[in-house]
Amino acid sequence: MATRLDGRQLAATIEERLQAVVAERLERAGRPPGLAVLRVGDDPASGVYVANKEKACSRIGITNLGAHLPAHTPAAEVLSTIQRLNADPAVDGILLQLPLPAGLDERPLLAAIDPEKDADGLHTLNLGRLLKGEPGPRSCTPAGVMALLADAGVELAGKRAVVVGRSILVGQPMALMLQAANATVSIGHSRTEDLAALTRQADVLVVAAGKPRMIGAEHVKPGAVVVDVGIHRIEAEDGGKARLCGDVRFEEVEPIATAISPVPGGVGPMTVTLLLVNTVASWCQRCGLDQPLADLLP
Ligand code: NDP
Image (tube, rainbow, N blue to C red; front, side, top):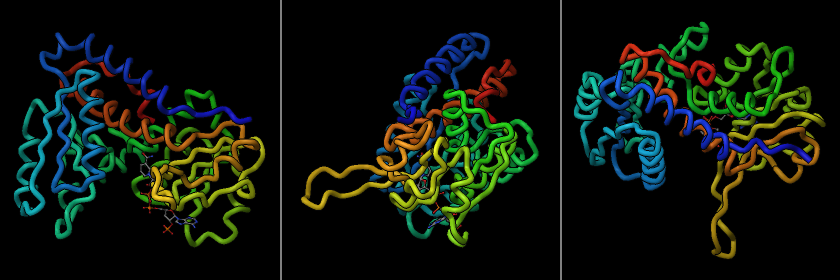
């Protein structure tokens, strides 16, 4: 039976580490780290995500400097809010919570975030830094996957890694991080012919296709490490409680894998934690302090 890559437990361990990093440097910094989660409108799922992020901030000593703008806020006003946060010396990280209300184009708004305060690690400059192996904030979900793999002692150098999905949010930065760790990386996507033949080559398989339960035993080489990034809410047919599932048919793959991440409780908690890591790392840098988190920013 496979080892479970327990994201909840690792997230808690990293939070303790962040708490200590903040507490040890607070006096020298002269101010706590600040994260601004900017929410526009009232998407209900976003409300839950933002609340989780704010709770996580308060656990480790990050000040929440976020703003919640009404759904009908004009783009120019959202932009000026971002510019104000860019200029605010108490803000170390900015996150624009997606999705935005219909009619607001996220691209110019995301591009307006100061790259040094890019808590999500998705700014064009920071993706370029990842490509070039330069330090900077890292995309949270793939960096969270790398932390899970490192914590489980998964050796990547020389191994075959396959990433299913090529989004800018997950698949592409994931592939770059695995490659930087000296894995030999392939990417599968919706136009890949015979996906199972590709994924069966993987020693490490990361699935971020956004298709519920699409990866089964036929896709997995026995002994592989499988990370399931997908997350889907499945409504119960009998009107009972909805449940969450991933892109992987866990019960089929667990018996043949060496290690596997569950959904929920795998990659999800790590994504929030990496947001905090990016923010604390930015705080250290902006306050001229040493930054002891490089191992979490691959
Ligand atoms: P996108 O929809 O942006 O990208 C999905 C990718 O999967 C695309 O590259 C697509 O290919 C590929 N794909 C879709 N169908 C198939 C298929 N049948 N076979 C092979 N490849 C396929 O999704 P995201 O990357 O944003 O997210 C992926 C999943 O991860 C979602 O379930 C999302 O909810 C979850 N997620 C979870 C997070 C967490 O914290 N746990 C954080 C972020 C995302 P193509 O490019 O050809 O269209």
